Length: 236
Image 1 (tube, helix red, strand yellow):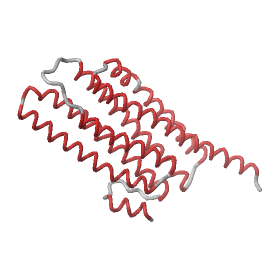
Image 2: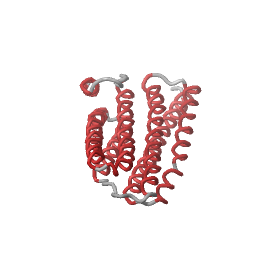
Image 3: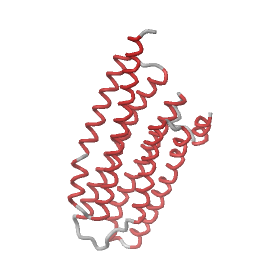
């Protein structure tokens, strides 16, 4: 048995495992950013708004660091098959996580704007909280599926994205009604639309992450396909 090859193989496995761990760490931090941004919005805590915006650079730094390590692994190890798919999926997953982080910072900035001005009528956040819970659950499940390489769970995440889209449309309809009934609510309503839109995009990015898990395990790119095709690939 070639002990040198075994040693190199174990080293490579450790490098890949380290990549996976750092993706999950980044995901956990992004989850926290979302929760704090929504809390800042609903509580009117301006310091919390500033904290979320200020911490966005940490998400960016995590993405850059992991991306650099992926490039090093590709250059030094020249991975093939499932190992190569894992590295490619990691690169795409951290891009989605970074963009989710951007959306969380966007919500925090909007929260600061909304809560810095006296309003004729304070906005309702019940629907936003419900949509945020859905988006957060999608992200958590995507990360869990990535950790366990769970294909069937990933297909469920893809299905859940439709619920987030439905919530967004429902909020949009409600806000349009408010604006028509009372033009004084237009400014606040439009700001809440931006928040809902940010949450809807988070759902899209979490869906992308779930699709990457299917790619790692099955070797099939299911992006831009309908849900039936995703389920078919997941069940094979």
